[in-house]
Length: 343
Ligand SMILES: [Zn+2]
Image (cartoon, rainbow, N blue to C red; front, top):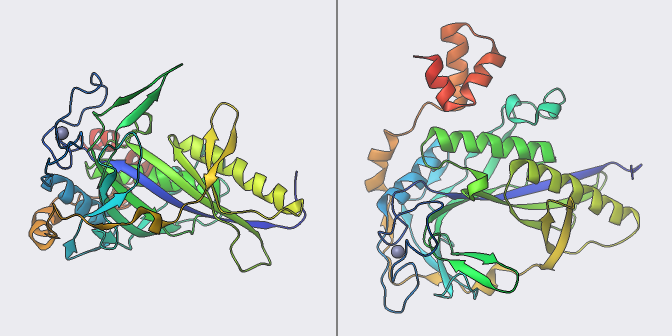
């Protein structure tokens, strides 16, 4: 249904990125996708009582590197907290995460024209838009549940994989911008060698917060979260569906409530999962097993690892090789292609 009153969509993303370290965040088990279930485990990542975590310094460096690539402020001290909740894929009953002292704050992701979906590249609402970030923090991934016909199995190989959470400001205004943000972010993560960011392998996962409001209203509408999106095109489709669903509800005079929804890829619809829980439900407190980290000791090393980023590479290709801006964009969108071009 097309509406007579124009509506504005406000979207914020929470992106989870598995880091490409050799071992897990707090133990020496290897990080490897597709291994036989429960073959990469130990007392630490199984959450057995008395097992003590040991910090993976490379995961800290990769998070700081991501912060530098995205122009973030790097916190002088990083601290880990316990996020308490119960779920079968997390036998400790808490996840080690960062609460009030994330490693990185602020920063931004520049959106390039070619990062938009092909059919939307001719009609970009805000060219050269930069999406600002709230924070980047480091945490451990949980195990993965597999639901069979009558049983559920849990694979602990994923438990304890270093996971970065990147949170944007709510300043994305369309499904196409969300698509461009994820595509641009993925390129930068690959450039930095911090993640392969392969959504099919669960290396990049995304929760979307979306609300709509009539254009003449300043107050934001009810924030609705869509959980666990695992493809960039899926994010675009889910947001497109959800924005229209909310507009239709408002047009019918319904009041929208804050809630969490899932995305059914086959049906092409979002569905209600639960009403939203609040942060204080998690009863965060500092993890007594882990000392705070001074980032100063990491920074010297990490600064030297900041690569030439896609935006700078595009500009250099135009300048140095006199290729068109479009060709430079295509070349720089794929790091292997860009390297091959320069051989
Ligand atoms: Zn382990």
